[in-house]
Length: 133
Image 1 (tube, helix red, strand yellow):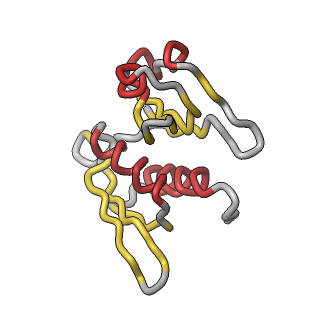
Image 2 (tube, one colour; image 1 turned 180 degrees about the horizontal axis):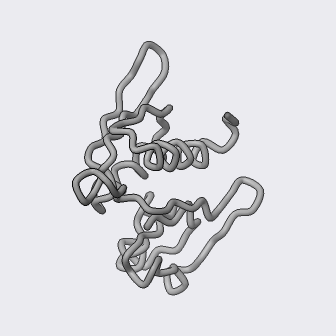
C-alpha cells in the first residue's frame, strides 16, 4: 500500500472494510484523517472513532455502521475527488451536492476540514477531498 496519499489510503481502508462487513478497522492516523473520521461519525456514516497511540505511531480505530440488521453498510460509496496529481478546488457556491443531498462532500478549507453543508454556511471554498454516500 502506498504511503504517498494518506487520505486515499485511509478512504480505501474504510471502503474495503465496509464491503467485507468488518465491525471495526484500524488505520494509521494523521490530523486530517482523524477529522474526516469525526465528520463521518457526526453525519451518521460510522458508529465510533477512537484515536490512539501505539508506541511512536498514531492510529485511529473506526467502528463501522450497518443498517437493516447488519446487512447493509451505511457507507454505500466513497470517492476520492482531489488527488495528489490533480487537485480540485471550488468556491463555496460551486460545492457539489452529493446524490441530491443524501451524501456529503468533505472539503479542506481555510476554516478547517468541513462537510459541504458546513462550508456553504461558512462561505468557505476549498479542496474537495472526497464524497461519501
